[in-house]
Length: 167
Image (cartoon, rainbow, N blue to C red; front, side, top):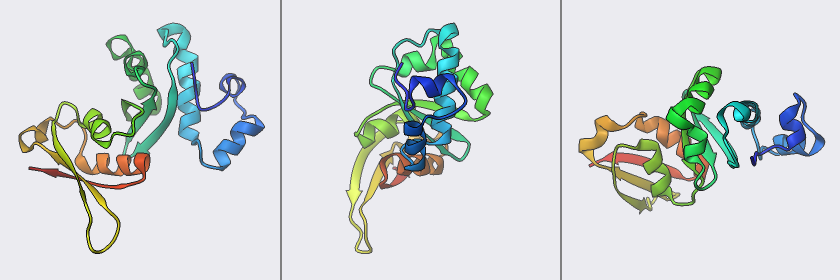
């Protein structure tokens, strides 16, 4: 299992010097540490295997866990058992997505089963570019999470401005 903190810090309630520096530099968050320790503690019961947990983002009662390629299924667990354990512990909704640089894929995983029809980059006169995510209007009701929550979370993940529109 690959986690954002070292094995020693996973097993104890204290952080080593290196992991503490990561926390101070904001490379990791307290939520990352709590999630990593929880995943480590339930590994024996749920056999998570060799998953890679990269980081997490919290936004409006939603936790998005970013894991390595091909690790979503193992992190969710058979029948969603692992996610249920995490949901009970943190008392928040949890979505697990693969680490990717592809904005369309990232948002697509978060809004599934709603459907993305396209991604455009809009360059307003006033400043920075806005990534406009076009979602099929017919699938608006299928979105598992409110569009504003997804926009806030994705901004934290990719550090770019996005806007979800329904067409």
